[in-house]
Image (cartoon, rainbow, N blue to C red; front, side, top):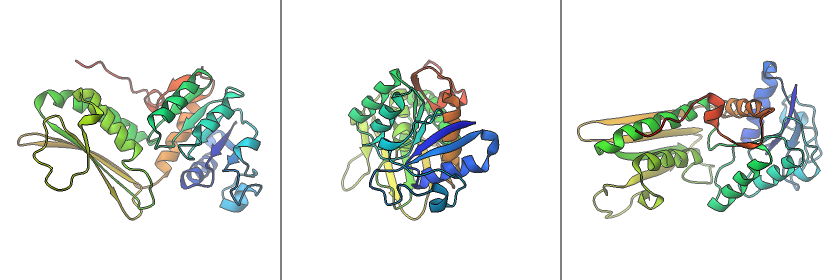
Length: 272
């Protein structure tokens, strides 16, 4: 049995992960350390009493948490993830980070911790989304030389705070690499007399409303034809399954920065 902790254990994703682990005994994963921020009103209460999910563990702050041998899954806040990694580094246990919205400096600080612990930082844990990343990368490599215009559109629920989503950002980055373009080529939304679309432009659009878990569509728009590659998530269970698979993958791994492509066995192919 692999004992693990969830940082952000009372959030939507934290509870989805805990529920998934509890419902699948074949995963051999046991939540022993549900973690929330230090001033959370449920600190000190039993996790199962608060959530109804069958884990008999006391909710604790990260500062007071015992480090589980299986490591942590973190779905907390961009500004606090570094503290999770520092805590994990005390015993060299793995961490899976599903939190998004990092600045460039925050991301670099997190990645630097991979010299001490096995680490995965993923903008989206869903198995299908990570296959989407590979499909978009391959399509972009093939279509860039034929003048197809790339656009990314994402839709999320009205409570989501960051835009564009981490997943849309990863899709954008796959396109930028394949098209040999830079961040200054990206246009986030359009308004007013913006003029004709620039030849080197990459559009990224964010929609918000309702309870949409996450829709992502990449368009490659050519002359007389277009390609659309789309993923729709209808349940957070997809993200929870991927996060748990990632944590299992990291068990007994050497320190290093891994990815969901490693978890899924998706290997990068060189650009022709």
